[in-house]
Image (tube, rainbow, N blue to C red):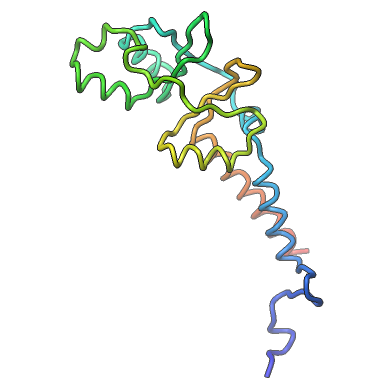
Length: 176
């Protein structure tokens, strides 16, 4: 025996038709899947810091500390983006070379030819690449120029805002 209709959740009347709750879920998934790297960069303050290949590791550490960040793009003035230097790279350098590493150029320790993304890339795709590559920062390139840096933190902040907005919309649907 079927439960009375008053005890049943919203269901589609005909096969293939979607209920209001299914529509909200699909709308949410579609909105999330359509978010681009450019959308997230627009929400950031726009500051973009970098170092050159000849910068000393000590100066890189100072820049990371001043700006309270964990990764910097490395630029060759003749070529453009050639690498990134992260806290992890610095730990490896000092672990291997000790204090001597601080005077050496960043080119000796950077991660060369990093994976990059574009302003049009979908955030979900970038998250997968970052997770699979086991890195937390990715340079954003637009027309062969460094346009920004995308971090897992940026994605998480954006995602929290999306979830809060969706929660509000669902509450509004419930209230009427």
